[in-house]
Length: 161
Image (cartoon, rainbow, N blue to C red; front, side, top):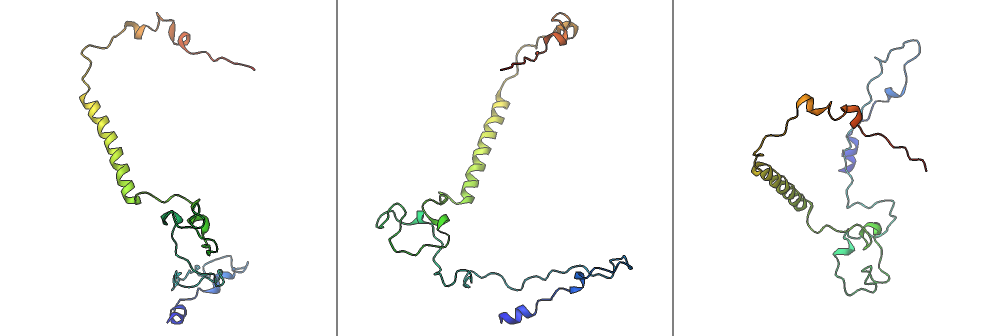
């Protein structure tokens, strides 16, 4: 059944490999490159040829295993156990397993953000207006009396060590 599916895949045309001659200078006679859609997908139950008969162990983090009853309690393994091919990720030193599922964590984060934004909106809405007018100065905010804009700018200080 698998061989029938592989044979039914359309093969790409090889005409795209040949460039047009220098005399024609057109690419209209060269068909567009076609990429066939794979008829099969990688089945996790199939043996990986790179493992060369290495046993297929379950993909379970050591952090899910019970903490007691091991020859090496820190790594949660017995002496002589076959190591998983992805031991770096599944060992006790790998990434921590999530405490809650990602969907629940995203829901909690969204609720926290919504709470902060809601409290901010409520604080802005309940803050009363100032009961007095803002102070207004004549002559463009006392620019002339304070020495002008050039006098009030911060001067840069150069420090040479």
